[in-house]
Image 1 (cartoon, rainbow, N blue to C red):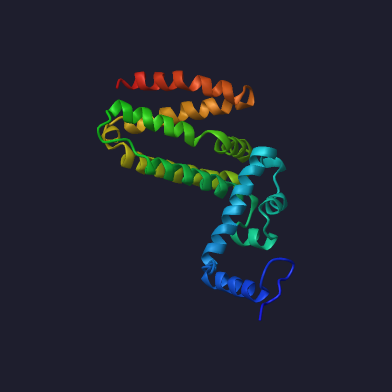
Image 2 (cartoon, rainbow, N blue to C red):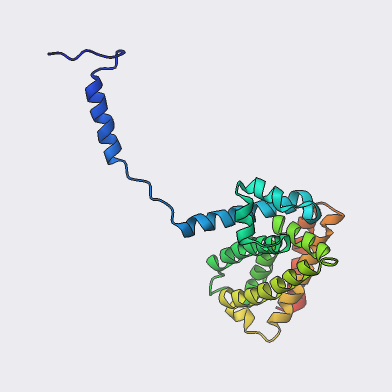
Length: 225
C-alpha cells in the first residue's frame, strides 16, 4: 500500500527514520569538566576587567560592572578575586602571560646575530606594553600612588614579570643574554618603551608608534652591537 505524502514532503515514517539515523550518527558533545568551567569563568572576568580598565579607568571601575560585562555572578567574582586590587592586577598578569607565551612560541632563529636578537627582544617588549596592556598598566601605576593595597599587588607583579621576562629572554635569545651587559640593556629598553607609552596622556597612540622605530634604533646603536 502506498503511504500518503504529508505536506508534499513524502513519507513521514521515512523522514522520522532518517532523522533518527542522523541523530544517532551525530557525535555527542563532550561535557566540560569542572576545571574547564572554572577556567572559562576566570578568563571571562579577567578579559572584562581589562576592557573596563581601557574604557573607564581604574577609578571608575567596579566589580559590579566587571561581573555584568563578563556575564557571571557576583559570587563567582568573589570566589576568584577577593578585592578590586587583586582583580585588576591579575587581569594585567593574564594579558602579559599571553604575550610572553607568544614570544616563546616564536623565538629568533639560532642563526640570527646578537644585534638581531636584541632588536627582536626590544620589538617584543614594545608589543608587550602596547594597546590595552599599556592602558591597564598606566592606570594602575597612577592609582597605586595613593592605594596601598594596589601598590602591594603591583609591586609583586612587577617583580614576578621582571623575573619571567629575564627567563624568557634567556630562552629565545641565548647569545644576547650571555653578555654581561644584557640585563642592563634590557632594563634601559624597558624604561624607554614604558616612557613612550606614558605619553599617551598627552599625544595620540599613532604618534607614539611613529616615534618607536627611531627610539629602538638609538637603543641598539647605544648598545654597541
